Image (cartoon, rainbow, N blue to C red; front, side, top):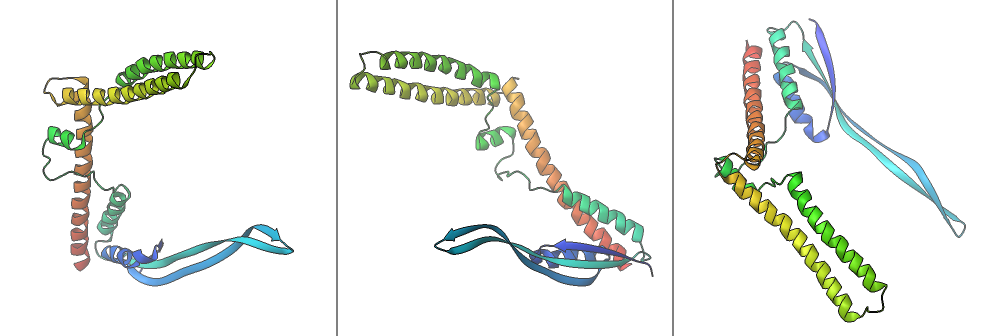
Amino acid sequence: MSLEIKSVDVENEEEEKVITIFQSFGWKLKSSQRIFNQTSSPRGAISYENLTYIHSETQTVDFTKLVFERDTKMPNYDEIVELEEEFWALCANFSEPPYMPPDVHTMEDWATHFYPDLRTSKDKNKIHFIHGIILLTYFIIFVFIVNSSIINSSSLLILFTFFAIIGWSWHHSLNRCREKVFKIALKSEDSVYRSMLKERYDNVIKKIQKHEHCVSRVAEIHKRTAELIEK
Protein backbone atom coordinates (compact mmCIF):
# COMPACT_ATOMS: atom_id res chain seq x y z
CA MET A 1 0.00 0.00 0.00
CA SER A 2 1.32 3.41 -1.01
CA LEU A 3 -0.27 6.27 0.92
CA GLU A 4 -0.40 9.98 0.14
CA ILE A 5 -0.93 12.43 2.99
CA LYS A 6 -2.71 15.79 2.88
CA SER A 7 -3.06 18.32 5.68
CA VAL A 8 -5.81 20.95 5.65
CA ASP A 9 -6.53 23.85 8.02
CA VAL A 10 -10.24 24.69 8.21
CA GLU A 11 -12.65 26.82 10.19
CA ASN A 12 -14.01 24.87 13.14
CA GLU A 13 -17.60 25.02 11.92
CA GLU A 14 -16.54 23.73 8.48
CA GLU A 15 -14.88 20.56 9.81
CA GLU A 16 -17.67 18.06 9.08
CA LYS A 17 -18.34 19.54 5.65
CA VAL A 18 -14.68 19.35 4.61
CA ILE A 19 -14.34 15.79 5.92
CA THR A 20 -17.35 14.71 3.86
CA ILE A 21 -15.93 16.29 0.70
CA PHE A 22 -12.51 14.65 1.09
CA GLN A 23 -14.03 11.27 1.88
CA SER A 24 -16.04 11.47 -1.35
CA PHE A 25 -12.70 11.42 -3.22
CA GLY A 26 -11.34 8.39 -1.39
CA TRP A 27 -9.52 10.17 1.42
CA LYS A 28 -9.66 8.76 4.94
CA LEU A 29 -9.44 10.98 7.99
CA LYS A 30 -6.25 10.22 9.89
CA SER A 31 -6.46 12.90 12.56
CA SER A 32 -8.39 15.99 13.60
CA GLN A 33 -6.80 18.52 15.95
CA ARG A 34 -8.25 21.75 17.32
CA ILE A 35 -5.60 24.47 17.30
CA PHE A 36 -6.27 27.25 19.80
CA ASN A 37 -3.80 29.87 20.96
CA GLN A 38 -4.01 33.35 22.40
CA THR A 39 -1.11 35.74 22.62
CA SER A 40 -1.00 39.24 24.10
CA SER A 41 1.47 41.89 23.09
CA PRO A 42 1.86 45.38 24.61
CA ARG A 43 0.76 48.26 22.40
CA GLY A 44 1.33 51.20 24.71
CA ALA A 45 1.24 52.50 28.26
CA ILE A 46 -0.74 55.20 30.08
CA SER A 47 0.57 56.73 33.30
CA TYR A 48 -1.74 58.37 35.84
CA GLU A 49 -0.91 59.35 39.46
CA ASN A 50 2.07 57.03 39.79
CA LEU A 51 0.14 54.18 38.17
CA THR A 52 0.95 52.78 34.76
CA TYR A 53 -1.66 51.01 32.68
CA ILE A 54 -0.35 48.74 29.95
CA HIS A 55 -2.52 48.50 26.86
CA SER A 56 -2.15 45.13 25.18
CA GLU A 57 -3.67 43.54 22.10
CA THR A 58 -4.75 39.91 22.17
CA GLN A 59 -4.49 37.81 19.03
CA THR A 60 -6.43 34.56 18.82
CA VAL A 61 -5.65 31.59 16.59
CA ASP A 62 -8.50 29.09 16.43
CA PHE A 63 -8.95 26.49 13.69
CA THR A 64 -9.02 22.74 13.08
CA LYS A 65 -6.15 20.85 11.49
CA LEU A 66 -7.27 17.84 9.47
CA VAL A 67 -4.91 15.19 8.16
CA PHE A 68 -6.09 12.79 5.46
CA GLU A 69 -4.52 9.79 3.79
CA ARG A 70 -5.36 7.97 0.56
CA ASP A 71 -4.12 4.81 -1.07
CA THR A 72 -2.55 5.63 -4.43
CA LYS A 73 -3.07 2.01 -5.47
CA MET A 74 -6.83 2.16 -5.00
CA PRO A 75 -8.97 1.22 -8.03
CA ASN A 76 -9.68 4.06 -10.50
CA TYR A 77 -7.18 6.28 -8.67
CA ASP A 78 -6.17 8.36 -11.72
CA GLU A 79 -9.74 9.21 -12.73
CA ILE A 80 -10.69 10.05 -9.13
CA VAL A 81 -7.72 12.43 -8.84
CA GLU A 82 -8.66 14.06 -12.14
CA LEU A 83 -12.25 14.58 -10.96
CA GLU A 84 -11.01 15.92 -7.62
CA GLU A 85 -8.81 18.50 -9.33
CA GLU A 86 -11.73 19.61 -11.49
CA PHE A 87 -13.95 19.87 -8.41
CA TRP A 88 -11.54 22.18 -6.57
CA ALA A 89 -11.03 24.27 -9.71
CA LEU A 90 -14.81 24.76 -9.93
CA CYS A 91 -14.95 25.70 -6.24
CA ALA A 92 -12.19 28.28 -6.71
CA ASN A 93 -14.23 30.04 -9.41
CA PHE A 94 -17.60 29.61 -7.73
CA SER A 95 -19.66 32.69 -7.00
CA GLU A 96 -23.28 33.38 -6.20
CA PRO A 97 -25.28 34.31 -9.32
CA PRO A 98 -27.03 37.67 -9.75
CA TYR A 99 -30.60 37.70 -8.48
CA MET A 100 -33.15 37.02 -11.20
CA PRO A 101 -36.83 37.40 -10.24
CA PRO A 102 -39.01 34.44 -11.32
CA ASP A 103 -41.30 36.68 -13.36
CA VAL A 104 -38.42 38.06 -15.49
CA HIS A 105 -38.13 36.32 -18.86
CA THR A 106 -36.88 38.97 -21.28
CA MET A 107 -34.34 41.76 -21.43
CA GLU A 108 -37.13 44.32 -21.21
CA ASP A 109 -38.55 42.63 -18.09
CA TRP A 110 -35.10 42.67 -16.49
CA ALA A 111 -34.54 46.34 -17.36
CA THR A 112 -37.92 47.37 -15.99
CA HIS A 113 -37.27 45.51 -12.74
CA PHE A 114 -33.71 46.77 -12.09
CA TYR A 115 -33.77 50.13 -13.92
CA PRO A 116 -30.06 50.17 -14.89
CA ASP A 117 -28.26 53.48 -15.35
CA LEU A 118 -27.43 53.66 -19.08
CA ARG A 119 -26.16 57.24 -19.20
CA THR A 120 -22.83 57.63 -20.93
CA SER A 121 -20.02 59.85 -19.67
CA LYS A 122 -20.84 62.26 -22.50
CA ASP A 123 -24.46 62.54 -21.30
CA LYS A 124 -23.41 63.30 -17.73
CA ASN A 125 -20.57 65.65 -18.66
CA LYS A 126 -22.90 67.77 -20.78
CA ILE A 127 -25.18 68.34 -17.80
CA HIS A 128 -22.25 68.92 -15.45
CA PHE A 129 -20.74 71.48 -17.86
CA ILE A 130 -23.96 73.50 -18.22
CA HIS A 131 -24.67 73.61 -14.50
CA GLY A 132 -21.00 74.21 -13.75
CA ILE A 133 -21.14 77.39 -15.85
CA ILE A 134 -24.33 78.46 -14.06
CA LEU A 135 -22.76 77.76 -10.67
CA LEU A 136 -19.62 79.70 -11.60
CA THR A 137 -21.74 82.69 -12.64
CA TYR A 138 -23.62 82.44 -9.35
CA PHE A 139 -20.35 82.36 -7.42
CA ILE A 140 -19.07 85.49 -9.16
CA ILE A 141 -22.32 87.32 -8.37
CA PHE A 142 -22.18 86.06 -4.77
CA VAL A 143 -18.60 87.34 -4.28
CA PHE A 144 -19.54 90.69 -5.83
CA ILE A 145 -22.49 91.15 -3.47
CA VAL A 146 -20.52 90.09 -0.40
CA ASN A 147 -17.77 92.60 -1.22
CA SER A 148 -20.23 95.40 -1.93
CA SER A 149 -22.31 97.50 0.37
CA ILE A 150 -25.63 96.21 -1.01
CA ILE A 151 -25.60 93.00 1.01
CA ASN A 152 -28.58 92.54 3.31
CA SER A 153 -30.83 89.77 4.55
CA SER A 154 -33.08 89.97 1.49
CA SER A 155 -30.22 89.68 -1.00
CA LEU A 156 -28.72 86.76 0.94
CA LEU A 157 -32.07 84.98 0.95
CA ILE A 158 -32.34 85.41 -2.81
CA LEU A 159 -28.80 84.10 -3.31
CA PHE A 160 -29.35 81.02 -1.17
CA THR A 161 -32.68 80.35 -2.88
CA PHE A 162 -31.01 80.62 -6.27
CA PHE A 163 -28.26 78.24 -5.08
CA ALA A 164 -30.90 75.70 -3.97
CA ILE A 165 -32.61 76.01 -7.38
CA ILE A 166 -29.31 75.31 -9.15
CA GLY A 167 -28.76 72.19 -7.02
CA TRP A 168 -32.31 70.96 -7.64
CA SER A 169 -32.01 71.61 -11.39
CA TRP A 170 -28.68 69.79 -11.53
CA HIS A 171 -30.07 66.73 -9.77
CA HIS A 172 -33.34 66.82 -11.72
CA SER A 173 -31.54 67.09 -15.06
CA LEU A 174 -29.43 64.03 -14.30
CA ASN A 175 -32.55 62.04 -13.38
CA ARG A 176 -34.40 63.20 -16.49
CA CYS A 177 -31.43 62.18 -18.61
CA ARG A 178 -31.46 58.71 -17.03
CA GLU A 179 -35.18 58.33 -17.74
CA LYS A 180 -34.75 59.52 -21.32
CA VAL A 181 -31.94 57.13 -22.27
CA PHE A 182 -33.72 54.28 -20.48
CA LYS A 183 -36.82 54.78 -22.62
CA ILE A 184 -34.66 54.88 -25.76
CA ALA A 185 -32.99 51.61 -24.74
CA LEU A 186 -36.35 49.86 -24.39
CA LYS A 187 -37.26 50.66 -27.99
CA SER A 188 -36.56 47.98 -30.59
CA GLU A 189 -34.52 50.33 -32.78
CA ASP A 190 -30.75 50.05 -32.63
CA SER A 191 -29.08 52.63 -30.40
CA VAL A 192 -26.05 53.04 -28.17
CA TYR A 193 -28.27 52.72 -25.12
CA ARG A 194 -29.96 49.53 -26.29
CA SER A 195 -26.56 48.01 -27.02
CA MET A 196 -25.44 48.90 -23.48
CA LEU A 197 -28.62 47.40 -22.05
CA LYS A 198 -28.16 44.20 -24.05
CA GLU A 199 -24.53 43.90 -22.95
CA ARG A 200 -25.45 44.22 -19.26
CA TYR A 201 -28.32 41.76 -19.59
CA ASP A 202 -26.14 39.26 -21.45
CA ASN A 203 -23.49 39.50 -18.72
CA VAL A 204 -26.10 38.70 -16.07
CA ILE A 205 -27.38 35.72 -18.06
CA LYS A 206 -23.82 34.43 -18.58
CA LYS A 207 -23.12 34.58 -14.84
CA ILE A 208 -26.33 32.71 -14.09
CA GLN A 209 -25.56 30.06 -16.73
CA LYS A 210 -22.01 29.71 -15.42
CA HIS A 211 -23.33 29.14 -11.91
CA GLU A 212 -25.88 26.58 -13.11
CA HIS A 213 -23.19 24.75 -15.07
CA CYS A 214 -20.92 24.73 -12.03
CA VAL A 215 -23.63 23.31 -9.76
CA SER A 216 -24.59 20.71 -12.36
CA ARG A 217 -20.99 19.66 -12.96
CA VAL A 218 -20.25 19.34 -9.23
CA ALA A 219 -23.24 17.02 -8.89
CA GLU A 220 -21.96 14.93 -11.82
CA ILE A 221 -18.48 14.73 -10.24
CA HIS A 222 -19.85 13.52 -6.91
CA LYS A 223 -22.02 10.93 -8.66
CA ARG A 224 -19.14 9.65 -10.77
CA THR A 225 -16.64 9.46 -7.87
CA ALA A 226 -19.20 7.56 -5.79
CA GLU A 227 -19.51 5.03 -8.62
CA LEU A 228 -15.73 4.70 -8.96
CA ILE A 229 -15.13 4.23 -5.23
CA GLU A 230 -17.87 1.60 -4.93
CA LYS A 231 -16.30 -0.49 -7.71
